[in-house]
Amino acid sequence: MSSAEDTWATRVGRLGHIARAVLYAIIGFFLLRAAWTADSSDAAGLGEALNTLQEQPYGPWLLAAAGVGLVCYAIYCFVMARYRKAVAL
Image (cartoon, rainbow, N blue to C red; front, side, top):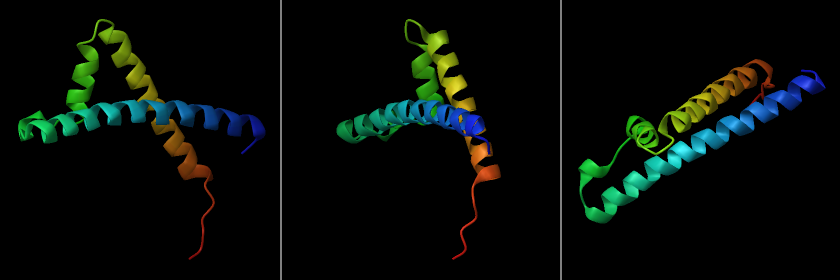
C-alpha cells in the first residue's frame, strides 16, 4: 500500500470507527435504561438507534451522516482484509 493509500485508509477508518462508536453509545444508553427501569422492552438494537437519530431535529442529516460513517467503516474493513499481513501462530 502506498503512503497516500495508507493515509486515506486511516482517515476513512477513523471516520467509520467514530460512526460505530456513536451508534454503539446510543445502543448502550438503551441497555442502561432497560437495566435501570427493569423493563426489557426498553432494550433496543441498531435499528432503534437509527430511528432515534431520524427523530431528532436534523434527523435526515444525522441519519445520512451515520450511513456515510458506516459505509466508511465497511470500506476500512475491506482495505484491512486486503492489506493486513497474516500472522503465523
